[in-house]
Length: 218
Image (cartoon, rainbow, N blue to C red; front, side, top):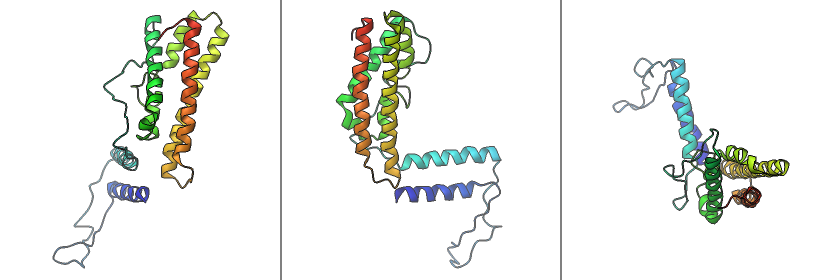
């Protein structure tokens, strides 16, 4: 119901924003039954680019409205933990990045229920697949830089890919938990949150194994 109302409101706003559109209303204080003519009320003409930009902002706003965050949710603070990066890393920076990633995984597991209260996107923020604040953001770069220390590069590469895969799968499950709340699916979001947690636990185990392989201590 909330989704339908939101989309209806968004659609009406978009209609009003269309270039050269005319909207007539049947609302007049002195003559309620008289419809205001198109010469009396017209929406200003907007350039096509301005219209598209405005339409996008309206739809984004509507999507935000239908996915409220619970007041007791643990939401990642954007002012903290900005070590994530996509640039090439030095060995020292790679160590710091990997440790930060493992800390994000540990925090997510310890506060999983509270994080889930913030919705699927909130879980994905801690996984580093939404936003850049998580210690897992850019973790691939860190693992690539640390690979030079591995005695068995094949095993190291396989373990690195395992870590990446668990993050992707956990993020996908968290997204599904968010999606089912706005669809006709009868699958409860808790099912997908549970599946995501299993992948996060696998990620923690694999990260510990990789750290042992290259002698990195937390």
